[in-house]
Amino acid sequence: MGGMFDPVHNGHLNIALSSLKNLQLDELHLLPCGTPVHRESKLAESKHRLAMLELAISAYTELKIDDRECKTLEPSYTRNSLLAIRRERPDCRLFFIMGQDAFNSLNNWYNWKELFSLAHIVVAARPGIVPEFAQELQAEYQSRSVASISELKKFDHGKILTSYFEAMDISSSRIRKCIANNESISELVPQAVEKYLRAHNLYKGENSF
Image (cartoon, rainbow, N blue to C red; front, side, top):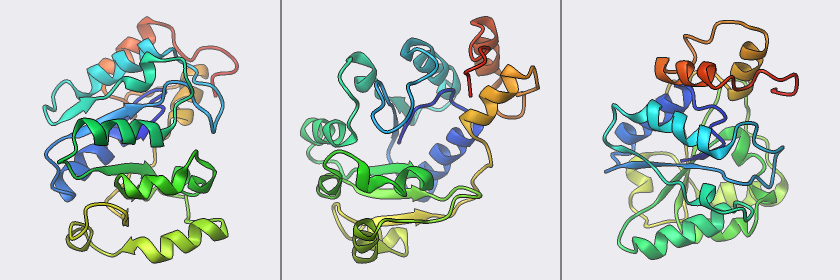
């Protein structure tokens, strides 16, 4: 499951835990982006985002952190990460989980069509975000989309499933804005994460959102 996790929040955990259950996964790895290519730079350093992830998932043994993208200054390309994971674990069936907003611009990603040869794509529907594709992505979506998990698992890779479990209307940008405005975030992030970001004075600047 990719993302900036800047910061990690309860919505991320909801998607991760729901995906574990609904997709019947053995484990789920959170893959924080190191050096983003398709959006503005990360606001918290990688060490802080990784530390908050560790705190957020500490109670869930099936959730892991894959920090490979944070260990290098090279641009973070999902294709390269999935290719490396595929080589490390050739016998595993991979599901790459991403939000609807990210999927809508998938055709702008590096070697994006190659992703389908490496994994299935699971799109997590988000409140207020509608499917809106460029024509070339629409063609891929129509040819690869499946309607159920059972249908998805008939194939080793290359299919797209949109997951409609109850997603929380929470975003990292909303949390950063709340912090900058000295508003409560106690219902948006795990308690340990809130303590960490308060202790390290994260997202207090005027450009935090």
